[in-house]
Structures are given as structure tokens and as C-alpha cells.
Image 1 (cartoon, rainbow, N blue to C red):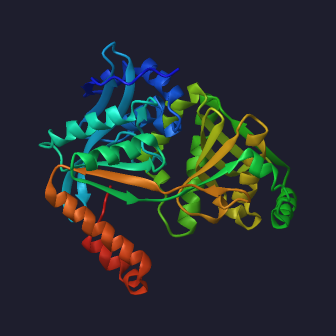
Image 2 (image 1 turned 135 degrees about the vertical axis):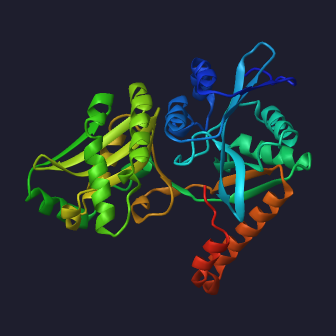
Image 3 (image 1 turned 30 degrees about the vertical axis):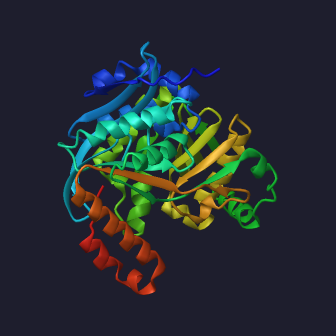
Amino acid sequence: MLPLPSMALQLRVLRSIKDYEASREEYSRLLEVAPHATPFHSFEWIVANLLSFANQGVHVLEFRQSDSTLVGVVPLVLRSGRRYLRTRTWLEFAGQPFADYGGFLVQPGFETEVAEKVVEHFSGSGAEWDAVHLDKMMSDDPFARALLSVAQTKHAPIGAHEGGRVWRLAKDAHSANQAGSRSLDRAAKRLSEQGALQFEVFTSPEHIESRLNSFFQLHTARFAAKGLHSPLADAQHQEFYRNAVRCMAPAGQVWLSVLACGGLPVAMRISFRRGERLHLYSTCFAQEFARYSPSMLQLRMLLDYSFANGIEVVDFGIGESPHKEQPGAIQQPPLLLIELYTRRAAGIESKLFHAAQRLRARSTSFQRAGKLLRRIFPHDM
């Protein structure tokens, strides 16, 4: 039975990673009861981001009952940069910029009380930042709905904008659509002629870390073949992946799946696990094997392996891509960007930017003027 919400939640602001780590056990317990929690909400994911990316200050909000029981955590960091029309300073989720979902945890039954405290806190403390950007929130999450409702009731300056969608595949839907693909069957046969095929999933930190360099090399070479620069060619981004593995793999939250041909990796994929849900995150394949569709072959093997080994739902992550439209997969409601403005000019710029984005999506002429739009509104995260 859930405890009754307290009307006098206590708010504590943590200003360092050390203070944040002191609440690790309580945070993990809260994670277990939060129905919308993903690996991107985990303590380990957020610490990996704090260790990897520069910020101008940690700003973690902890919400406790009078008996000190933790019922909510909103981990934020302060950042500055070009946003909309000018350089701004804002707060955002500490798990960004590369999470598929925004990272907050609220115990069921406390959504409204925590939302009220959040709005109250930011309505009266805007001297350091222009806005609070809460990106990639699930639109069906009770806390997201409570935050919008409370802000509107209190007439707080707030904006809500729809973002990307996620494709999700359940085990039952996958089982009901096992007709297979003849083209992939042919590709597998042709690839096997080049060498024996082997599919493996690695979960231990040492096995994953020992293969990360191969992952980086395949990713970088694939991008270079298309005339693009892979983010994994950068040392800082590589260190982020290493930190994610070091922090998350000991807790069983990382899968590295590898399809090898003749002993050489031809497709690799990093995924994050929480309970019975697997979140596909990043993939790469060897350019010289591109004609054999190695990435799609590897995905089919991973789906079969996942559903045979305790996974009930596979989340394909944010963004559009043909491989995500698997038979039986369902597109989820759009994610939300919720913004709380502490300076009026920031709110006006945001509304102008998102209005222009909506017009661009509907208008062919505006699409042709896209490059000009990005120069006018260089929305850098």
C-alpha cells in the first residue's frame, strides 16, 4: 500500500556529485517503484554523464517527507551556450545531452506535491539562469502532467513542446510476427559464405570494455565512408561511453551484442537494460560488409536473443529510422520538452523558435529555407 502524500515535503538542493552519491541507496529504491523509469533515469547513468561532460554546477532537487523518506529526485545541471537567439544559461537534466528520456524520479502518489515544490522553487530563484529545460519527458508520465497543471494553475511562465517519438516492440507482438524476411535470410546466407557467423551478447564490464575500441573504430569508419564525422572519433565522447560502461555494467545494465564473421566483428550494438526492458542505444557495422545488411541481421538476432532471455519489451529509442519499424512495433506518444522561464525574453525566443519549427514542418517553401532558419535560430544544446 502506498503511503499517503505529505502536504509538507522538504526540499534539499544538492550541489556536488559527492552529495548526490550519498543518496545512492535511497535513489535506487525509488527507481524500483517509479513506473516510467528507464536506464536513463538510473543513478549510474547520471553519474556517468556528470563525470563526462562539463557543467557550471550540479543542482539536484531532493524531496523528502517529514520522516526523511525520499519521494522525489530531479537531477539538474547548469549549462551555458547559444540557445535560440543568443547565449543563455539554463538548467537541464543531468543525464543529458545523450539520454533518450529525461531523468527524474517521483514516487507514485507524490507527483502533484513534488510538482508544486518544483514550480515554487524555480519561480523564486531565477537569478542564475534564464530557464529550466526539462527535455524528453514522457507525455503520459503523471509527473509531467502534474508539472504542467501546477504551472498553469499558478500562472508560472511555462512552455510545452512535442519532440520525437519512440518505437517499442513487445515480446508477444514479436512472437506473432515471426514470418521473417527473405531478403535478410539471403543476406545471412551470403555473409556466411565469407566465414562462420557467431552472435554473442556480453554483459560483464571487462568483456565490454575490451571491445569498446573495436566499436569506436567501426563507428568512425562507417561515418567517414559517408563523408561524416562520427562523434565517437572524439576522445570526450569515447570517455563518456567508457564511463557509462564502468558505472552501469556492474549493475547488469549494459549489453554489448556482436555479430562476427570468421572471427571478425561485422556489426556491434550497445543497449541498456533495466529489468525486463531493453533500450537499444548505439550501433555500428563494418563498411566492407555493408552489402550483406549486417546491422539488420544483428538486430534480428538480438531481438530473438532478448525475448528468449528475460526481456519483455524492446525500446528502439528516440528518432526515426526504417529499422525501428519492426513488425508489431508500436509508436509511443511524443516526448515533451517542458520549459520554465525565469526571464521573459527567453520565453519569447522559445515560442518564436518552436512556431518556426512547426511552420517549417508544414510548409514546403519553409523547408527549402531550412538552412537560413538554422542560422537565425541556432538552437544549440
